[in-house]
Length: 389
Image 1 (cartoon, rainbow, N blue to C red):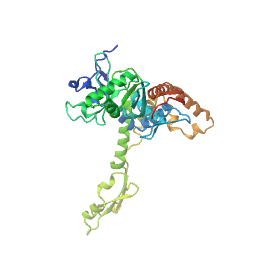
Image 2 (image 1 turned 90 degrees about the vertical axis):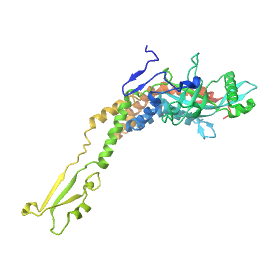
Image 3 (image 1 turned 180 degrees about the vertical axis):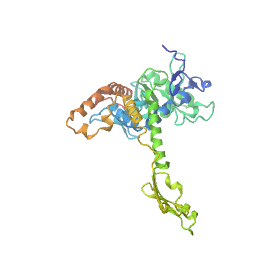
Image 4 (image 1 turned 30 degrees about the vertical axis):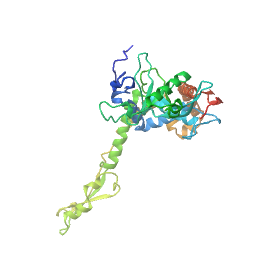
């Protein structure tokens, strides 16, 4: 087994393990997520920049979410969020980040000594980092910021970030957290502390990697980058490249100035697609050769749309395979598959992918229902515990 304190070298990026940022903060120091704390941004940007990656991510997330039956319920009236919204948002992060963060506020029943999670929401995975472990291997805080990629100083205070206590369903643990909050904020009463308590965040990981999981698509992140750059090249060549023009060379009138032609027919007009269907007129000096009175030339485009054909096909195959072996027909199905002579093929593909994503779907539903204290059966809510929302 590889030593956890070793840096794991991966092609394309380094993902250091156990690297702490701002060590002088003690237990409030945070574990960086990847080189320069940028790994989750790298993952999401690679997916978002790839057309195949984006489509595969959307379909993968849908299958991980599954289907909620008619008894979907509102779980956060303040933000108008239903249980299906929570599950869908969590599935999007689970799909590419292999984990998600769910925030809950706390309602305490002192008499019954019960803890009820209320008003849940999903915090974007890229915005969350966890605190240093104590001597017993327990981390206790989640720090949230939308600018971890903008490091203001070599040593910055964790006070600059929002922080939440680690999710714990035990009544005694929540009491301890509220009292700790009361002490830190120097509040006079426990009731004041409870009212202003920031809540808890549960960090859910699909793998046991510490401190953060690695993307399931780690092997194809560079492929998604490549697809983005191929698209960018196509865009640049289409807008600014030499797309091919018809040029007509005509005899220059003795009284006509070259400047007049330059004003009308700048070479800048050769670039991009504007005017590619017309012609460019260029004057020539006087000549006694009648064959040169009018000369028409066709210039071919420098843009070759077939150049990346095989590469794009290979990239697409690699990318969709990293999303639990997603069948290509589910993201770019033609009528021949969906409505052809054998329509059962499409249904078989859907059933195949439903089985491939079932482990993650079951994992997601189990964690969400457990966090919110909701009893549930697969693909449907059957009973809701009495919980203030």
